[in-house]
Amino acid sequence: MSTAWRLGVDSRRCIGTSICAGTAPEHFRLVGGLSEPLADVVAPADVVLDAADSCPVEAITVRDATDDRLIAPEE
Amino acid sequence: MTESAQTTESRTVPPARQYPFGVPDRLVVDPTYGELRENEPMTRVQLPYGEEAWLATRYEDVRTVLGDVRFGRAPAVQRDEPRLTPRQQYSGMLTMDPPDHTRLRRLVAKAFTARRVEALRPRTQEIAEALVDDMVRLGPPADLVEHVATPLPIQVICELLGVPYADRDRFHVWSEAIVSTTSLPLETIQEYLNNLWGYIGGLVAERRREPEIDDLLGALVRARDENEDRLSETELVELAGGLLAAGHETTVTQIPNFVYVLLHNPDQLARLRADPSLVPAAVEELLRYVPLGVGSSFARYAKEDVEVGGVLVRAGEPVLGSLSSANRDGTVFADPDRLDFDRGQNPHLGFGHGVHHCVGAQLARMELQVAVATIVTRLPGLRLAVPEVELEWKRGMLVRGLLGMPVAW
Image (cartoon, rainbow over all chains, first blue to last red; front, side, top):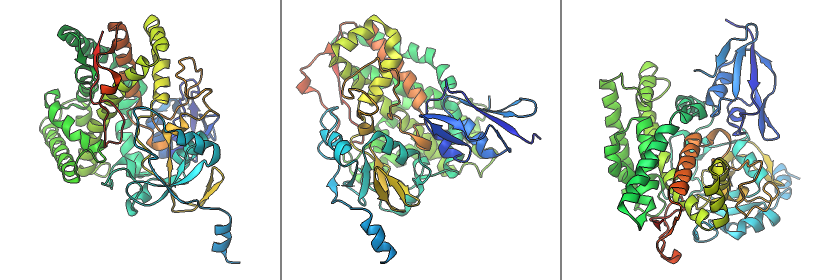
């Protein structure tokens, strides 16, 4: 079980729906109309997976901070 | 001085205007929105049903109301919410906030990602070509609503969800209950909804008998049966029925609306025809330009005191955000009343904003792109086959659109 996750938002994919900032406001916010993680490395939390899996353009990635394994979005 | 007196002094609550401001006129955005954005960006409104509300008309304020977590939809079920429909909705994703909302949304969101939708494009194109072929064979004049705009999104959502296309005449009629305000008597709305839920219930039972069926309905049934805490039986039926009904009513309506606007902008139409690579930008601009809704619905309730557009909205007060008004805000969209395919940035709110951003947005985008490209390129002489005054527009519904669109080509 990983102890830290790394959050990424692909600004070329993001369309600024704000679904992530509404789903996980403690992890994502909109800056200039596009999403951005509040912190790049976070403690594992289900709500981060919810945000990644709810993004309609799959702009959010959650990776294991130690080995870079992709945790979300689900394939 | 008491605290309540201080709060009262800090804001003036103007008398409420009747809303919508007038009878919907084709696809014209009521000029009152422009005046309000300028002079009274947060105004009080009284809808045909329910309590008074604030109405936000500026782009930034609308985004705040729809996106800020200090606002929510869940309180609406405890209230007589402001609405255009006699019926109030007490269940479904649009009456929930995270984390409850997230639980349902996540179950369906994966089926509607840009990547999953892109895989449906070739099949959608094939359906669109076949429908246009059939219409061309019949010859002009032909009704674009009946022959292309209606069957295309229905066939796509049927195949995605796993609903027999042969049943379309029945569920298409029932789906009107979802978008009806006064077009149907209340008893008929209830009857149609019951029919729709009953029909979906039958398909759900079928999936349980044949669990290997690989479609969205089957996936939802499995999600419920594997973990009953994730999805109740009622939620399952309402979710699937909602996707079927809402999943096509809007796109069916927007295809003719888009064609109507293009016919009114012949220069832009000619550009599209000459260069179909403009289609994605054109669809975004049409999503911005066309006021699909007759008026705002689904007010967000303030969970604490929030300042929006210079007004202190008190905890517990409902606020509506006008998408059509936000999409014509000149501080965000230069020359907002002009149809312009060359806007570099087009952050329109046609699909809403925040957690309730249309779950089918990517599917609708793809269908609209296919429909517009196919109609424009396959029917180069496209024109109305009747004088414009003879076109019949929907009445008594949440959405604006044409009941029929006789065209020649």
